[in-house]
Figure 1 (spheres, rainbow, N blue to C red):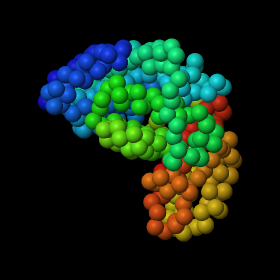
Figure 2: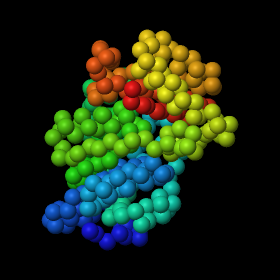
Figure 3: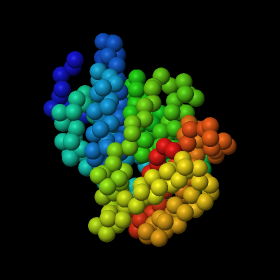
Length: 285
């Protein structure tokens, strides 16, 4: 059992992070990584606690990744709250925080990127075609820098989880990619850093997103026609004030379109705008 550090050390460079992890590996200590973009909330902290159960050493990365933001998206406005993030991690058993700047991850002349397919196709890619290439590239770099045995990701970003899992398998990266159940508010809203963008009125409406998923999932399990259920869920969300990007049912293991609704594992996924805030959610069916 390792000592629980009140204030975990911060590494700003890949070299420093590698040096630290090398010492742990020399001692045969298992390492788990929790990648984040900061603005930590209870969902992130739950992932940290789960990581502590999976490994003797825990690293949390904090890096707002410009490669996953389109020019019209909120990279500059994305909350950067390192001091409060570090305070939130205090006493949770984090052994190091990897918090590089942009130049450390994407130095001058950087031109290499990962191209993804499979579970990245459709859903988010239809609206954010740049997104998963940027995610895959930065996660690969974090895996290489931190050399974890396991990495923990929340299931709220379900498509992202499957893309990263596929990437790790395809590139033979020796990292176990572990999904953790979505953490929710008492009213069902999935925890997200972007929830802070919601106005009070929008926050009161936001739980309708998960409620629509739950109703749709129950109807599908009861045998209702899938196309009709998805259409009704979309109409319900629009009536509640959302602008819907998609409500789709996919194979839970590959995110391919469903061929056999009776034998495949299923996942119901939604993305919708409430005012200026885009929310996503998903449930097993």
